[in-house]
Amino acid sequence: MLDEKTLLCLGGQDNRGTHETTIFTLEVETGRVTLLRRKHFGNTRVWSVFHVWRDGQRVMGAYQNGLAEDLLKPGGPFRPWPGASPAGWPFGHLSRSVHAAVVKGRRFVSSQTGIREIDPSGKVLRAWGTPTEVRLPLPFHEAPFYKSLDEPGMLPGFIASPYRHIRPRVKLLGHDDAHLFVEVYSPTGLLCYDVEADTWYGPVKMALESVEPAGMYDPKGLWVRNKEAFLHVRTAKVIAASKKAGRFVTSRAFREQRLAMCDAAPPLDAAKFAIALRRFDQAKSTLANVLSIDPENAEALLVMGFLHDRHCLNQPEVAMDCYERLAAIDAPPAALAGKYCLYVLHIHLGNWSEALPLGKQIVENFKLPGSRRDAIVRQNGEIAKRIGTAKK
Image 1 (cartoon, rainbow, N blue to C red):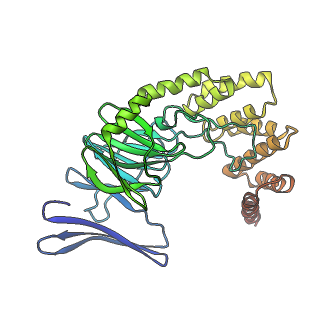
Image 2: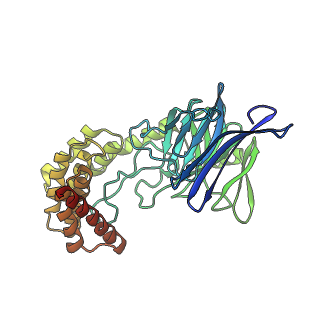
């Protein structure tokens, strides 16, 4: 509600690919409707508003792709969410499954990849994420010598399993007077976050699976539901069970635990941890030591290339040298990984004449999953068109 007498209403429709969004106010006593904004987007994708709040005289609206700074102002300013987390890694859009909560005057929004705390103006103050693999530009598992490693310092629900192959997800289920409740996947469980103490409890198992927020508020617990039933979870029971199992930690202590894991890890794992923490010089030194002993260590070459690729140091010449050395190794997984990374990097740089031969070699000389092979063939076709257009 805007005030005691007025509702702010937001809606829209998708009619055979034609998108429209509408914002209007409704005076409850008189029934008077005032149209504030209506916009047709044609075939352009429209993102949904999922959270509205006041910031002084402004009414803010959180969308999946950004923030409307004044919903009441026709054509009011709109700004995208920050492109990177406070740690420096890309954020991207919030996913379709988004939720928001206000606890102890602090505002939180979430999607499948983590939770962000924002201030009244929408600025991101803090972010917690799922353990992000140090991801290389390999969209398929054709590099069995590469072992993925989680980024340290994230949500504690995943601390028991530092190596994983399933993309972890989170879901903000609700809150009570002092706590957030977050469901985590891989492994599955419920986390309880004490906002004032900055302490995480859990994860603990729930009696229901595949739950959604039930839309009912309880000052001492959480209501959730699935297709079969409703479930009430008492905050005190979650905290007691977590303490009994020794599953509680502050955000700071958890990050220190993960840093300790980094310091104690074998060299290649330590390098991946360092990259995740954006300690690029440390990662470079560690990888250089590995390669001085074993110049054809495929995993070290791959990670060194990634370190110098556009994701990190952005030194493409050095990255290319690492990928070329990887491609020259007489082992199909290493050769494929090296050629594919070169292929992707040349595409990114617009080096079409260098990318196309690599793309053809990948399709002709390596066994790929059908969908991946088809995607590269299509990409090769697009590259050939670009080369043809440039010659005209």
